[in-house]
Image (cartoon, rainbow, N blue to C red; front, side):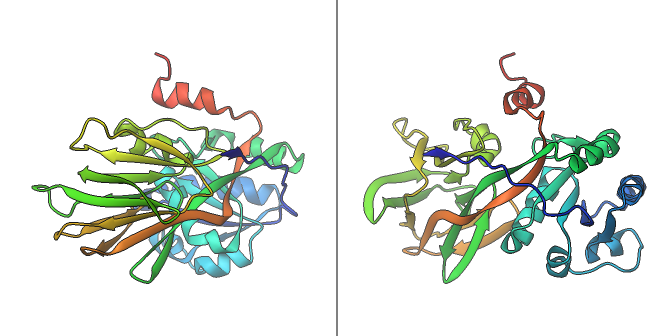
Length: 289
């Protein structure tokens, strides 16, 4: 396990690609306010196609094109919107700025009232780009990446699921319960936390493996080095669901496996220099209260 820090800065701050919270056309007013701040700072603004259609604007472009032709992306919404943007743009290795228009706001730390000031700080190089560990998985000849977690879950509410687990090809455990969460450190404060998993500093490189309602009291969460390769095989007839960041779902059958390892590349999040993780824990989770 190690800590990944970065002194990276944007090569230029001239073009920003915007993605808005989906199915929420009411965000148009906030977007226009943010857009005007960017334009006054001489930053060209382009809107992603689905976002443009949602708020009735023309000239939107597909996310791949947006990622290729922008200096950075801007996610306007909540943490779920940011996670989706990071995953969908991940192959382009482009930094993402989250502007908070959601509920919890654990990842999106810039509020609407702070946008103008933050843009001024960006031109003074007073910001940071965090490199967050991503995990990739393989199942049924399909591959995918996760920012928060990969969940292997039972298909039916009336039954449990059984799994055999290997690390680097060697058996290390068998699980029987409602499922299991394989989380990144960033995702440690998401589903992992709600089922009793540990909080892990987000710039750490490690896997968190947390059973969901295990049938045995001896099953406990594990924190594993990120250079391990983990494999889970379904050992009962019902099969299982594989859920990626709560957004994409795959079905796997009995005796089929999902293989999980660290991604070669990191997600890049733009933050305020003053952002302190433990202050965020205190504010969002009432840490220590």
